Length: 463
Image 1 (cartoon, one colour):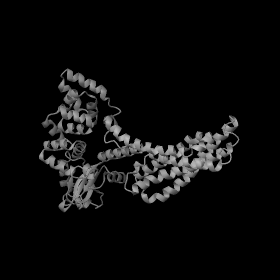
Image 2 (cartoon, helix red, strand yellow):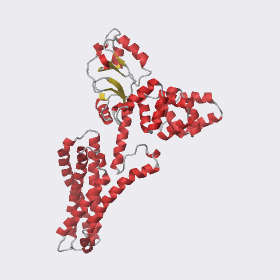
Image 3 (spheres, one colour):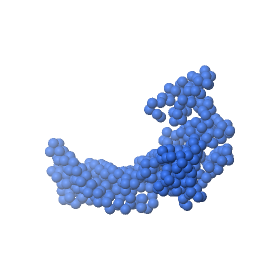
Image 4 (cartoon, helix red, strand yellow):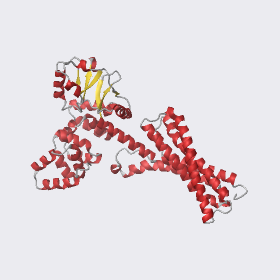
């Protein structure tokens, strides 16, 4: 919700107007609000009052507001509207927003709503739904302004005035040649500044950037970031202009991708809708699988400790430092994995950079491990002198902890940085190498390393 817009306060005012049957005043009040604020208002109104407000909105505004609602509120509004009202709202929605809505619905519901559209809008909707899921074709809209190179500036401006209300954006005008092949794009400001008798071809530099309709949506995110555009044209494999993608849609994709990566890094399947509207058993299903897998991984940690049961019984003091060892390794691995996954996501790194990453993390692991090892040794030294802990062999115990921390942090940073690259090389999402997963792997390695070092260094003394 907007920081300056209090939807709850306005909902109370709207409810008062509805009870007083002051429909004229209510309609005037609604027309003064942008679509985003109206969507916030509908989210907090009770279903009956939300239905009244929605019916008072102009059709074009209603379509825009409907696109901003969450899935639960959309469902409730659908249930309260008649079939003709539903058709009117869908007809007024932007094609890309409507496509996103259809993607969220069961196939039967999508087909029913498609049949409710006007013939022209139905044809547009079927075309967009024909592109692969998560492709740029699903994001694009066919509402744009195009001109011919042979037109004069005066003709082009007259065409813009005729088409701009229906276009998603008129900031950029697209120039097409024979067969509607894209040959250039021109900013509207350049056309406005030109003389009316000039031809469009005189303004062209034949330099433009376009997206391919079947490419992945993440490609659009990186292209927008690289070229700083508010819209980019979309072409088919032969260069024919088939639509445009605007910045608002790409920002939504970027948010969804970031959310998905964060959720996977937290050790769960990515949610298909916002947390607050996700059904309880869906949340359980998304989380249970990874938790079970991580639990199985943790049993290896228990098995590793069991194999050193004799050492633990002979020197119980060794068990005191197990949490210190495993947490340091897991934390360092999680840090490295997070850094590399994010760098891969934003295009800072590619698989070819693996050796550069490996070299950097090897050095980082040694430095960080040495630092934590020194802190561990200092902890034992303070305990020995101030509290008379750890017995006469505390220096050897301190050395064991110091080397173990150095080793486990080194292993953690290398494993955490390399696993995302390996997964991407194998065609998997790097975010699957979640931080709990990395921590589980490093836990097992850290325990084995710690007790083997203890057996070597403390043999003949504590062991």
